[in-house]
Image (cartoon, rainbow, N blue to C red; front, top):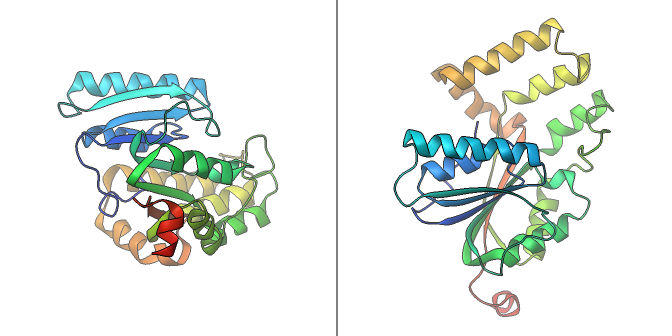
Length: 246
């Protein structure tokens, strides 16, 4: 289940990509399949080991084209272990809402991104996320949980302040918002509640089968209740001061 729309965020074979806070690796795997040179980085060592296993399995199965590479590594988003201007593309999906110093993370991403490079940032959308917070304190008051809810204009403002130029936005995963509302209403750790189990089955069916009916429904509902807000931006070729003057 991809949050980044690669038709709006195209990759070229050989692009060097950083998937920052990669989690289980869903975007890193897609970039690898598209021929990129991928670095998947996360602070969770257990998840990184699983991502590395999947990279190896993909290589063995021939899922990645010749020239594509994939590395999984532990690291700190606030102190990235890479030289300046190392990557053509940076993806950070559903991560910034967890980190107190979000401006520091943006600064690090800008530092390692090449001039002319592209960045994709996804966060929970304000409206659906606010419903979750209202229904359940346990949803966000956990170690490593969500510490803020972004409004779209707030996130775009921070992106611009970091020296990036936003060029597109959209919403994603509308069908997932009701699932999380149900989880929050019945208890975030209560997977046995009938409405939660029934809706989860619907989501699994949708992800596996991709039926036309749910695809059309999600596209129609994304502008209204899309669970995620996605922003795309580029790093100007000019120094920031010159770019602002231009």
